Image (cartoon, rainbow, N blue to C red; front, side, top):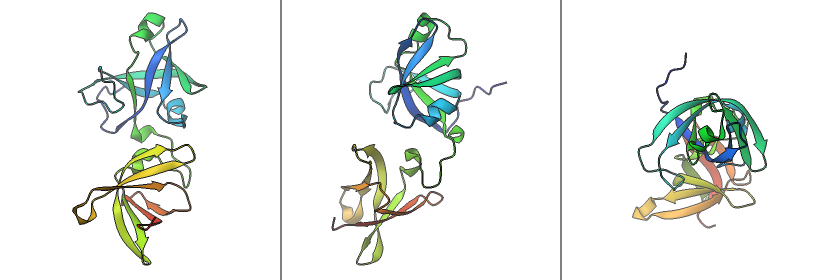
Length: 189
């Protein structure tokens, strides 16, 4: 039997954009190019509110759904949900946001990280061969070539944003246990 209490570690991964076909399938837009979690986890939570922003600010209502099948379809994922069998039923889920419990994510390979785990990490760089605190990772985004870490530097009562390429050349070590990232990034860049 399923525990219907909402997990405290839900991560927003995608949005339902439309129905797909006449048998209740859904067309889902993932926020990441890596769709592995959406394709491998079958316990989803959908939130319902009228927010238009990716990061919803209202108090959404979450409802659990069991995914019976999912497949990759171009930039989308097509899913079937237990109990949703008609286009009319699936239309009611349009624009809902899809969440998955972080505890259900597949284990990443060595040197692979979920972005959600990097946000909030303290980031250190170098200055005169010494390690210095540069700021806290507040966001990660793609620039086409590679991911970029958005770091908020609050040193010296200044709020300065630093953008650091998330590539092996600059990233020396990531310590998720202590929420720290060590880089060869210099303030002179």
